[in-house]
Amino acid sequence: MKSRKFRVGIIGGGGIAQSVHIPGWRNLPEVEIVGISDLSEATAKKAAAAAGGAQTFADYRDLLKLDLDAIDICTPNKIHTPAALAALNAGKHVICEKPLAVSTAEVREIGKLADKKKLKLMTAQQQRFTQSGRAVKAWIDGGNMGEAYHARVRAVRRAWLPTAPGFIDAALAGGGPCMDIGVHALDLCLWLMDFPNPVRVSGTAKTVFAKGHDMPNMWGEWDRARYSVEDFAAGFVHFDNGATLVLEAAWMCHQTENEELLAQIFGKKGGVKWPNAEFATVTNGAFAQGTLTHPVHVERPHWNEIAAFYDCVVNDKPSPVPWTETIKVIGILEAVYASSQQGKEITLKL
Ligand SMILES: NC(=O)c1ccc[n+]([C@@H]2O[C@H](COP(=O)([O-])OP(=O)(O)OC[C@H]3O[C@@H](n4cnc5c(N)ncnc54)[C@H](O)[C@@H]3O)[C@@H](O)[C@H]2O)c1
Image 1 (tube, rainbow, N blue to C red):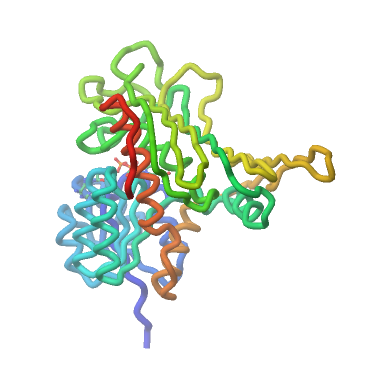
Image 2 (spheres, rainbow, N blue to C red; image 1 turned 90 degrees about the vertical axis):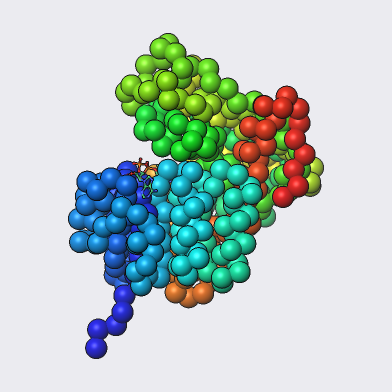
């Protein structure tokens, strides 16, 4: 008798679904992608073909009527919350692209519903599943860093501004580079620091270049009239254990690097940088330093992340990226925006 496969539905069949989520699911022999929902029929059909012949739906509520084990959400950010709530209410486990939601109220609502329904919920933070992420985490867990007292987080591009409405229209994106790429480096850094509680945040968020024509964009032209998110943000965070963190996120700025993604943590015994996995310390009174990884030819962190979600569902393990961690990441980013708007430091109670 043929055993039943693990049945997955995907909401949002665009870029990230086709490039990495569908291949990641298809890499798991016990999984079948049963249905795909997208507002665009052509996109849904293309994704369904890539998925090996899934059914297609314009409205994700029709997809949720199918017998499915899990839903994978790959829509623009602002659709994450309604889609996740609907999927959980339909009894499906949920993996959702970052950011899980663009406000702490929404993260809490989704998380509490998953807990109440005893369903798995995972934010797709693939950087935790890179070789360098794992190597730096293992080095820290091995006691090499000691107490972390400060961190630097950068997700800063010279001129890679995403042009799709889902990224630049605030009604769909809910935020600019903070929510798009800052969320990656910040999640990674907080994970490496064991998620201390953020208590105070001051920040700034502004649109410096994206409304004008000063900067060439390596991804081409964009709709300046529709552009309604920041293109630069910075923040300063205090944690309840006394540690601090500085954050910078930008899609455009004058720097020589095309992109810098960085989490650098200063500990009392040693310091470490991700993603290049360099460490610095002192051994027997002498400076010591090195690199924790070797270059990898092919790395598929999204595939690893999807495999980890599948494993947590079928083997009833804790979520690899639980909402109780995600809410600290989103809490900081939300407070950067609030501080910028209100012109004062924000006190966080998460
Ligand atoms: N982890 C990463 O490295 C990474 C990279 C890129 C994007 N993302 C995230 O993935 C998500 C999607 O980004 P993308 O680049 O694939 O965007 P995209 O625009 O290529 O695809 C999004 C798709 O969602 C569809 N959609 C919109 N509303 C919908 C609805 N109500 N029901 C069903 N489908 C709907 C759109 O038609 C589109 O095809 C975003 O949240 C983004 O932050 C993550």
